[in-house]
Image (spheres, rainbow, N blue to C red):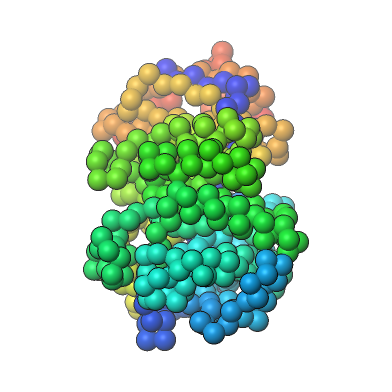
Length: 471
């Protein structure tokens, strides 16, 4: 038996999102103009098809976008004034390395607005220019203290450019992408250690995160960008966010708590404990919300896994265990040959091949099951199941235009006869759509409630979404 009570709302929901990754690893963009997303080699008609399938009315309908800031936007000689009240956009080249990421976001915004919705964009520092680090190379481990203000301005200038020049609704600034992972460098930080690590990173200690939350907030306020909020950056998972001291360091500083606008972390989990991985713990979110009630929390990257039912089960754990308000998975479109030494997270929605063709992956159809159900402004509702092979994610209408909805996940290898007990919904009937090993987001039928119950037979390894409606 599954029980869902749509009147019991656990927290507000900001929506699901997407992430186009363009320049992410190349140490020299002049010699390797990396485009991991692959739009650069697709025909325009194929780009438009993919954009429609993501942002169109019949697509995923995401409302969140993450946009990276790589290390190639500022040359060493183009230094800003040390004053906090001046950010000169002419010091930066914000178009050289991210043409397709900007194209993706602008085309996505156009389609999102056409269906009467809007986007919220978070920008994340992937890594600063090498000259800002003590080591003076890209992926240098330690920030050179003399460039502390310049590094803060580097991040803010990206948000400023996207808002003022490209017309993109940047809402949040995130300080780092997995900058907690000190294992990516040799102990003395003497090399970028490309063989061991990947991505652009710089090490961000808990104390540095606290300092930059306050510094970035101060510069934003002084320069008239009060509407942009600051996040603590993105640890690899929720386990590290708490256990490695990041959440507690923020709560110990009242000014940092005051300056914080959103909690962020990645939601990666490799299926076992140890080596920096752990459970989907909510403690970091809990202690920050105790100090600042109402804070929202997003997963800003998580694996598509093997693009099967476990992928959606992990999203469920981020929602109900980590207690988040929004989720953005890792890159939704990938060109595998552009990832150095092979991609550790090969699951995705779309795959681009070197001959200029593309494929729609099973991850797309699975993600569609949840992304269309959990629209912004809805609320996460209480949902219970006594069977550990069965998962459920429920979203209450919460005075939006969206109907009550829920997603049922069957991890088992067998058909499951399930009674779904629905409480306090205005919908007397629910329309069901399913993705399984044989089906790709197919409409099943309308299920009317009989004494508040839907009787449903779930195929093995399947995900089914039920949308409320009127007869």
